[in-house]
Amino acid sequence: MTIASNTGRSNVAMLGIGAYRPKRLVSNDEVCEVLDSSDEWIYERSGIRNRRWISGDETARSMAKIAGERAIANSGIPKEKIGALILASSSWKTKIPHGGPVVAYDLGMNGIPAYDIGAGCGGFGYGLGVAADTVRAGTAEYVLVIGMETMSVVMDPTDRGTAFIFGDGAGAVVVGPSEENGISPTVWGSDGENSSAIGQNYDIPEYMDVAQKMQHKDPATEPLDRMVVTMEGPRVFRWAAITLPKALGQVIELAGIDKSEIDVFVPHQANARINELMAKNLGLSDDIPVANDIENTGNTSAASIPLAMEEMLATGKAKAGQTALLLGFGAGLSYAGAVVTLPPAPKITSFDDLD
Ligand code: COA
Image (cartoon, rainbow, N blue to C red):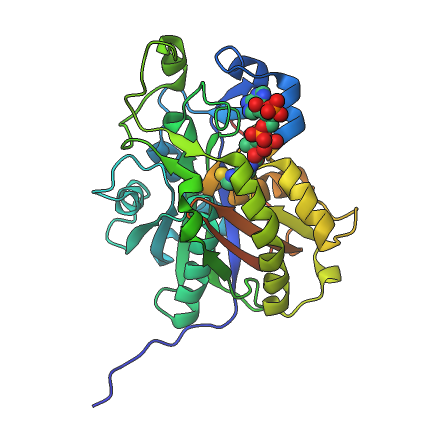
């Protein structure tokens, strides 16, 4: 007896990208109506001027659906051919059920394997790696990877360590076979010894409008009665300074390319200072574009890399077919990186429906 095995395609790539940005733009000054900080401090320490937070009928679910729809439309791959969906997120409101099947249903793809990856801000890199290997193994021909977060819902607006950093949004890519390989092997890892550096206090709430939360919050008298993210920023910064340069070196080595062949650097949008340091330490030349979506989108955790790629492609800062170095990192602590070929510039962009 021989048990059958799959055969896939060794050359895979991102064939399309799509994203959704919430309509509400929140400036540093608005954040500082509640937070004891200033526009100058926030910009100098993090590179953030604005972030976007959900409002009205925008939810985690609606953003994941729209980003997924746009990625599929922009890829030109018929929806029926998508064989699996991976949702990278830490802010889906329930653990049971997980979000993947709900999003697949919303996208009119009920029945396909759909599941969540919880790897913090590194989640998109994990999802991309698993999707690429799924296609390589022949387990699915095309995989939709969605990174989505509603960090505003799980944030204490008075916490000086987190309130100014996080934003909401969703970005997605379709991964499938391609003539030339466009996704290198993934370099990924974790450091559970330092897991307490980014965490949470309580369980994730249903839905809470952050504006409402800011109005009602009186830190002096009201104890926190809902889940918010906690972060020891300087501890994460130190960990990042030691771990990430090594990971970047490994990504380039494993991809079999020379540093000089990198056209674009798209690190997780955690802090523009960390990203500048990484680019400098890596010795990337000054004219290599480095994603800086954080300036007006904030840190959107698992959504930040697809959002940043989409922003660069939509605005012409990066071009389809260029070689990009990706690196996600965050809660876990964990990280995942790869060298990729950028997908076609999106025909439908996340800026189309913004004012
Ligand atoms: N506004 C104004 N001042 C603040 C402040 C705020 N929001 N937060 C802290 N401060 C003050 C501190 O009290 C301290 O003052 P002191 O020097 O008089 O004691 C000073 O600013 C420095 O504080 P520190 O906490 O060391 O700030 P930092 O320079 O490390 O910046 C982060 C804070 C969060 C921006 C930074 O640590 C960071 O980005 N860390 C990594 C985050 C990350 O990568 N996360 C993973 C993915 S989510």
